[in-house]
Amino acid sequence: MTELRLYRRPVSTWWWTRKRSYFVFVMRELSSIFVAWFVAYLVLFVYAVGRGEAAYQRFLDWASSPWVTVLNVVALVFVLLHTVTWFTLTPQAMAVRVMGRRVPAWQIIVGQYGGLAVVSGFVFWLVTR
Amino acid sequence: MADSIRLKVSRYRPDTDSEPHWQEYDVPLRKEWTVLDGLNHVKNEIDTTLSFRWSCRMGICGSCGMTVDGEPKLTCGTFLSDYAPGPVMIEPLANFPVVRDLVVDLSDFMEKLPRVKPWIIRDDDHRTVEPDVEYLQTPEELDAYKQFSMCINCMLCYSACPVYGLDPEFIGPAAIALAERYDLDSRDRGGRQRLDVLIEHEGVWGCTFVGECTRVCPKHVDPASAIQRYKLKAAMETVKAFLLPRGAR
Image 1 (cartoon, each protein chain N blue to C red):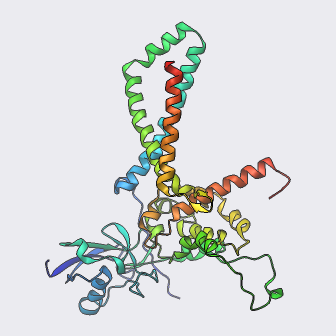
Image 2: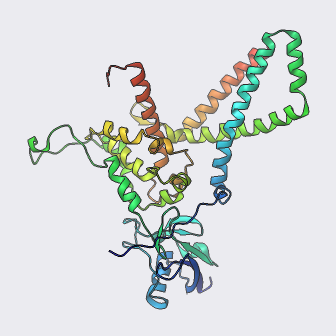
Image 3: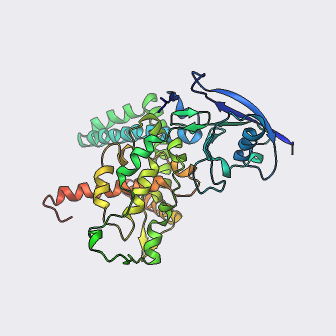
């Protein structure tokens, strides 16, 4: 048999900038760093509250510094992207069947936003009561 | 509508070229002509040295997959008029080594596919079953896997998958969708055997859910869904094995 001289095309480091869908995917992956940041922020917040009023005040001063504010705004944008993209993908990952019939994708997505609204409402009530 | 359209075709001749280059051809632009018709016109009328694969011309055989204007497409179902006024860029499927011009080497997939055992596996010995026994199935049981059985192995999903492009060890979307097709079949008992293959890192866990495989699939198989459902199954098995170490599978 003749030896094939195959041409293997190199994959560029910037492959993810060539297509919108690839770019959104990479941003979604990147968003997990900001989700982790929000978790760390929440832990610091709870820790400060637990150590008393002075520590809580110090935390508030730190949290209102410009760089933390900017970081939090950027993190919020990424967390929203994370939420929206994963909510949209859920029906693909889960084939939910109720009484032998497959639940349509839009109902699963709406259900998730409903769940998010309920949890947010509860947290809002807890904080403001 | 103009009466011709320019095709920019990627050429690679292994005996003379060190890398691919572009060659342009003008072909008639007709409403009913697909990209494949354009290529066949080139082959028959302009340049007989151009190489590409095709067979059925009706989206069944899965052999005419190519990259059209950067997107993996079945060229028999992609109309030239959608790209007017042109030019239309035609390249071989991405993520596969190029053999010649628009022909790619699919041996990697051919080696991977049988690993997931895409056939019905039964506990009972074939020799002991009556030769005319049929394994009956209800329409609901058929519906459970039908979508995944529509795969025509056209490789558009592998071409669209950046994970496969970066890590060729990844078993890939079509192979996993076909594993799911047999797992969901009520006649099959081979789920455990397939899970052992797919639970590895180069199995389902290689997938990061880019979702491009589903977007480009011409048969609406939704391989991304098959992979995520498999991940859920694999995770449940791991949890079960942890909680019930003595079996009860």
